[in-house]
Image (cartoon, rainbow, N blue to C red; front, side, top):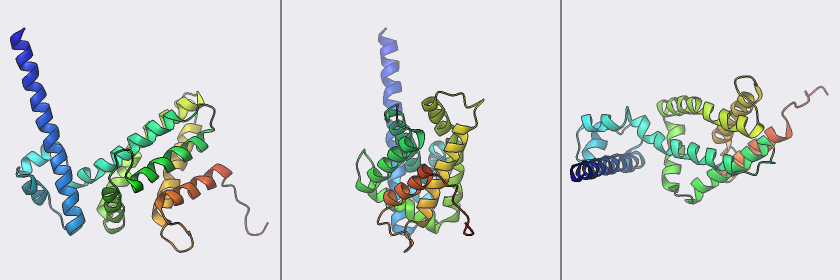
Amino acid sequence: MATDDTAAATAGRRERKKQRTREALIDAAFELFEEKGFEATTVEEIADAVDVSSRTFFRYFASKEDVALTFQEEQQAAMLNALTARPADEPVVTAMRRAIVGVAHACEEGSLGFDPGRFRCIMDMMVSSPAMMARSLEHAQKKQADLTRVIAERMGVDPAEDLRPHVVAAMAACGFRAAADNWEGASMGCTSLSEAVDQAFAIIEGGVNFPSKEQ
């Protein structure tokens, strides 16, 4: 029994050390991203800042893009949790609008455990780095299945047999992307991303079958 307890304690310490190393790499990476920019930062610099080797870095992350996307991972997890927690009688798009806008606002304000500095850094990197943007879109595409599943559960349908949850999830992704790409434009009149996201989802919620200019 004592041997089992000792082994468990050793394994627990090992896991805590690994988690501390991972978090230190993330902290160092974002400091360098803010100081030098994403493209100018190297994996070697991130590893050196934590006093580990590049080989150790790659035990935790496949690339520096993956480090940056830890924030996006946290955003998406928070959004799914917020959507799941919305009242059961809310229409799907309304529930998504309130969940996604709430998380975007939390990122901007630094609530729910989010770091607003990292959020601004991520938004800047999306504009300045094509590689970062491409990796972000790829990541979001992979996570769309999770959103589809939660939407289907809310609707009480099987996504394998019903196309609607897939369409709604795709619209949500496009709406968020459109807001993120355009919210700083003068014509939008938005002072924050959360406001732009709210506008985008209001459009989706109201219906997008707009009349042609001839009508």
